Length: 232
Image (cartoon, rainbow, N blue to C red; front, side, top):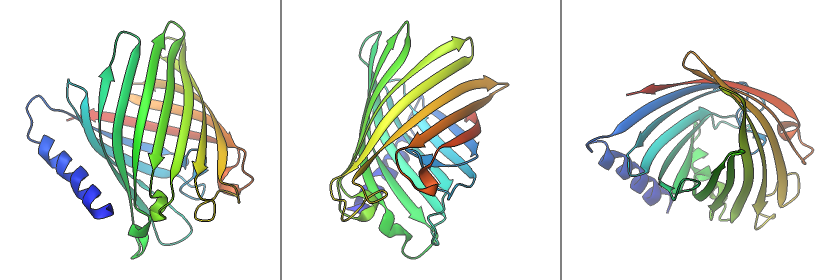
């Protein structure tokens, strides 16, 4: 399943590479920490990340994203692939659905961590800002054959031109805590408050986040990142 899904995703990227009217972009991001739902993936250290993305006017998109990681063993790189479609349902409602595949590298056993994930994201735009309801599901989380769910609600609003605030809450849940658990529990909560702005082509993000877990890699922290996106 892992190899066939990765091959399918990669084939999708190759298939669209020759399409007409393609919109390609690349993003480079430097972050003080790489946190995934509030849990550091770099052992509380900085991360250098990059992505390559393709999109079409009909909402179809595909891409690849990579970052350094540190799980306390020899795995040192995460390299992800994704493909999906964005629908603007009307002036206010939107839907984004797709599938992603997470791969890990650096040691002979790293690919044992590879796993697929399906996602659906609902958006609602109003005079109060942008509201999100997002869901992720994996049937083989970190290659352990366990069902894993993430549900998130978020809201972004503008405080001044070029200055936004985003508030989000998400919960991660494992269907089998004997196979995968966080701090001895089958689920945890994550809270994040972000300030977003841009300056001379650079995007800045300053976030305060925390979880209800009592572990060093998921305690309260401030995460700062700066990124630049280039059209290709």
